[in-house]
Image (cartoon, rainbow, N blue to C red; front, side, top):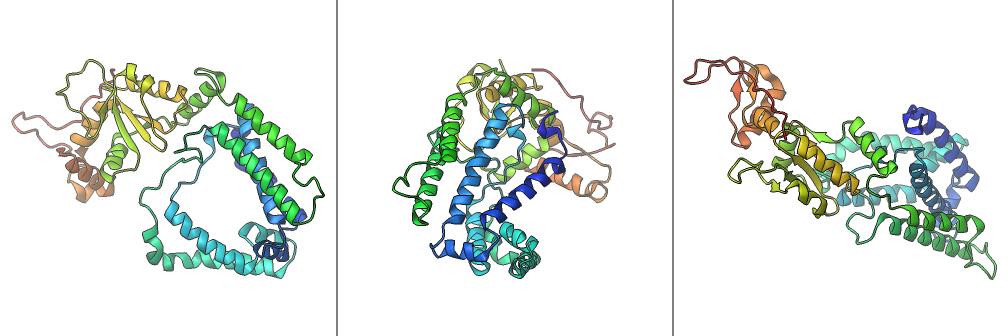
Length: 380
């Protein structure tokens, strides 16, 4: 059993307690230490936080390579630069006022400090007030934030290079902070033993972070995505993404030997299965693959994931699902009044794409036959 298969509380609670102990022992539960950092008189916060960042980064990456955790299963918060910049300003103001952040406030409160308790109460009060002021700040929030973005996305360098650069920058900052605090002698520029170990681990990771196509590590990650059903998307969800203009969305038609006059999902690109291996995928792009039934799309998905490309999904049941669920959906008898929100959603999507939603049980014009859902095709 891996760590990922355990209940979150089994790992989260001990790690949280340990992190709180480290913060307290480092002095971050004392507002005077944080105030000294804000006034550039005490750089304890910089040293502790950069040390925590590098430790977490290298710990997660090496644990993933060892198979202890599944890195792909770690949730990533959506990226919305505008909203997050505004949040940073608000958070920074509260941080400067209280000389405590939410984490250190909890540590201070647990240590019996009244200012820590006051800061924790302020956090809850701010959470309750947010819905009241939301109309004034909602404009800074994107309707479709970027999902699963990494620091190396959009950069002409690999993940391994970013890991090395972050580690070097962290060690350099910690050396400068130690110098400013007068904690180092003449050789202040020389990394400590712990910092040297971090640099060595980062360098070793850079050398080994290139799993070959078909390697056990990469195949294990792909199998995990399939088991968690993260490899596909249904037709209605795809229709909403297209209608709403989801940033970075690319729909790829991988049908083979099809006449160019046949129907193609709006905005889709025609790419033969043989061309998937050479498909240029930009940072932050989200690909949805489809074929006539699903087989070729699934093969293309595996090829892209084997190349290390994330953000790829397959249209479940292929173009047949699009035809049945978007172009000619069968709605509950009585239309929207009895179908509820779900029927209204389907009807609106179908009409937006020029479809013809039908009421269940209604007769087809000129046929004398009742509407019934068509049988799904499951071919290439």
